[in-house]
Length: 123
Image (cartoon, rainbow, N blue to C red; front, side):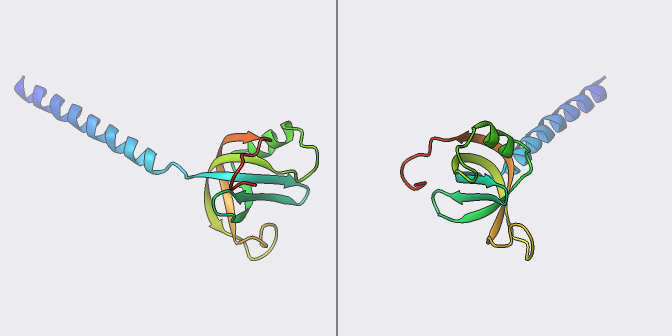
């Protein structure tokens, strides 16, 4: 009986430790937040980061950014809107779309999109 209780306690301890490890790993994999101006049009998908002014080509892997942009009913193609996204930066391809930019921003999650551009570094 004591052996079964010992095995049960070890199994429980292992489950708790494994659970904590997975939560830490999940937190570590959260993509950084980027805040800035997004422009979308026939041949442009660009993002200008507010705090640095860096410009990126955008790849929308969450399949929400372009949809939500079109739902804002922008007055002109390429009209910038303010966005906050989780994403990753990659080096731009040598040829093709996005090759004119230093980096590509891979959007993993759309946090916020609005026509209201905050005053300050985004203007």
